[in-house]
Image (cartoon, rainbow, N blue to C red; front, side):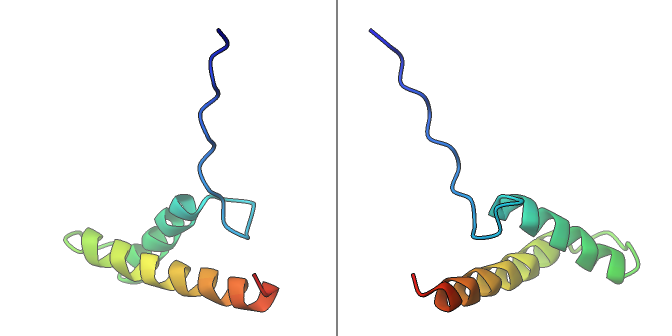
Amino acid sequence: MAARAAAAPKESKNESAPIEERIRKRAYEIYAQRGGQDGSAVDDWLQAEAEIGQQEREETQTSGT
């Protein structure tokens, strides 16, 4: 019996990087913009997640799907 391949993670319209990678990069940019001060990792992640989510919604609306 052949093994089934696992489904690949869903990629965004921006096929160069999965959504999680885009969020990670944006969260780091936010951290760097704050001067690299520790203690706000969750806030940085949530802000990045909101920004990337908004970009995804705009891309979806623009593409008409």
